[in-house]
Image 1 (cartoon, helix red, strand yellow):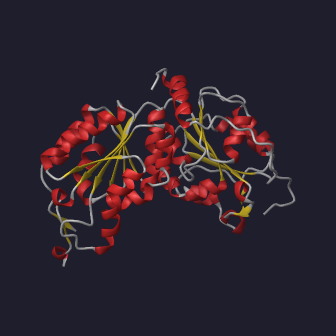
Image 2 (cartoon, one colour; image 1 turned 60 degrees about the vertical axis):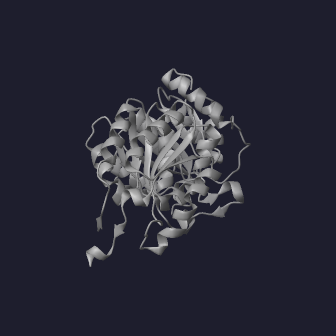
Image 3 (tube, rainbow over the protein chains, first blue to last red; image 1 turned 180 degrees about the vertical axis):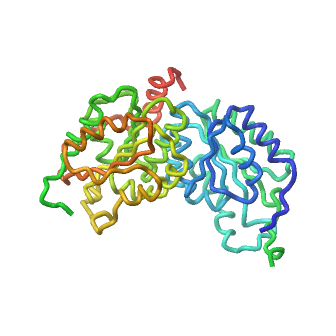
Amino acid sequence: MKTSVAQGWPGGVYDVLVRQNIRQVAYVPDAGHSDLIERCSADPAMKTTVLTTEEEGVALLAGAWLGGDRGILLMQSSGVGNCVNMLSLIENCRMPFVTLITMRGEWGEFNPWQAPMGLATPDVLSRMNVQVHRVDVATDAAPTLDAAISQSYDGLLSSAVLLSQRLIGRKDFEAEG
Amino acid sequence: MTDHLPLLNRRETVARLLCDRGEMLVVSGLGSATYDVAAAGDDPRNFYLWGAMGGTAAMALGLALAQPERPVLAITGDGDMLMGMGSLATIGARRPANLSVVVLDNEVYGETGAQPTAIAKGVDLVTVARGCGLEAPDDIRDMNGVGTLAERIHRPDGPFLANIKIDTHEYVRVLPARDGAWLRTRFREAVLGVAP
């Protein structure tokens, strides 16, 4: 399935993960994350874990931090709904948490099944006390994530960075035929 | 089914597993597993879940990856393990050698009125675990098996799962601290030597 992924941002985001000493990367894949996942998987200093559902990633990163590893959860907006109750772990334990979310269900979305969770994503995260930072311009991705990681791991907060579908690129269903 | 055998006492079972724990780090699943681990003796290297159902094994996975030199043990009930069954696939794919998952299986949701779990209807967690690539012995049904298991969970050649058949008796609740922020600070101080 072809996507017109904005060039450049995954490299800058990867550099932020390295500089911020992110050691565990858990993900349910999204086409928009594929470049970043490849970079992280190729880095021997990062432990990447593919999940069966996004809520596993919330629990996994909590365990990682208990053991001294900083981590990040990569997912698409549909996965946010899967995380809701597990975020109570983060809230109750006042643990740091960072997630980088590629948005679906907006900006010319072809698939209506992506729309409900895409629309609800910022509100759902906010209701679970996760601070939401939306990025619409590719050059903002790395500095926004950098700030989010700092305030999460230094400031013990929960942060989500949403990469808009306009930035990631519309998923092109028609091209596949 | 070998119903003629008396089922194991969960408190004796968990106490036996943890009596020579060494450097072991423990994550316990919500409900009775948390009470069992507390009853075996409070320890700052225990992380007691009081919620986050389905997350015990996944949390232990993250911990095991972060602390590869120490044995990590998830102790939980069959209800929690069924909810987090996908995490067995995640663990099987990731293959942390230092992670063991022990399921205290009484075939009921003990905290909510003893409604039968899927295990009571024939679902087999050992087969699931093997299918996910974990080493898993047959269901453990006696204290000899628990004794063997107590040594096995220290061997760094996992990932490993054991399903222990326990009785449904409700023991006096031994309630550990439930302030998660305090528990995690205590854990990190004990394991990492750092304050938050």
